Picture 1 (cartoon, rainbow, N blue to C red):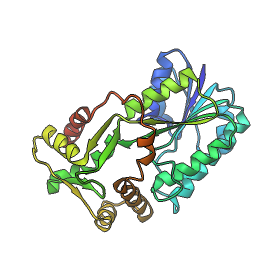
Picture 2 (picture 1 turned 90 degrees about the vertical axis):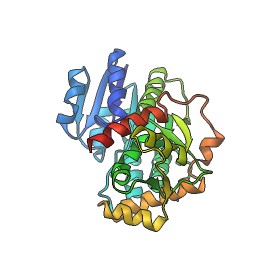
Picture 3 (picture 1 turned 120 degrees about the vertical axis):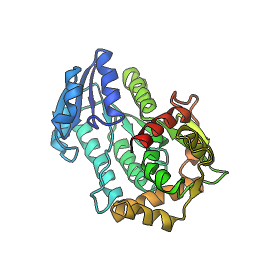
Picture 4 (picture 1 turned 180 degrees about the horizontal axis):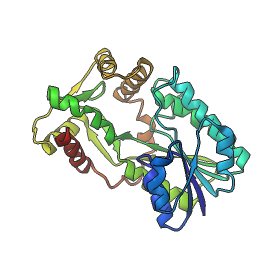
Length: 296
């Protein structure tokens, strides 16, 4: 089978491409920097160097593929982040139609059932809607909140002795996921290709209260009793701006956290709960957090 993978050597795209190559498939990986794709090329993948903002490049690269994996990479430059994300979805849809691709596995997010109010995920809603109009067999993967997002709190834990966000509380159960578990599901969907029309699949690795996240990470870094602090939106915004995030990005992240805190971000997940959770549990990720923590 011939596959095209967007996302370069990202945390999901790289292990996904590696798994497909090992399984004997022909894999082309799209990226902007050939240096970042050297390892994948050495393992047998082909590199297509170009921009996902270039529809002609995408159309040419997608041509002849049995299936394509699409994802929208982080970009902190746009003045309107949601609009930029939605536009990339439109680019993919146009290229897919032009190239005649029949199957697409698209990386979206939990919360993408909502047209607004969920930060950058509102952009992924727009991308999903655009892709649904491509007229192909489309599987949207909606993973939960990435464990790896907690790594941005290493400095906070070290300097203030707390971890937290503008969501939390003892009654809020968080839905969490590891990139490896997403790659496993993407591999399964791409190799089976047994989906038709437009459909959605939720992905999660673990479900824990915010206090359990703090407790587990605290234990891993030898800081028992590490507290989870739920910040106000204003404090969260100032913290992100102080860390150097552009205002547009920070405001979107605050909006997303607020949606998590209110429960609306995860409401559709609980209605369509996956039958099986992934393999990487919170305790497993806590070891990664501890490694990063000790290195900083």
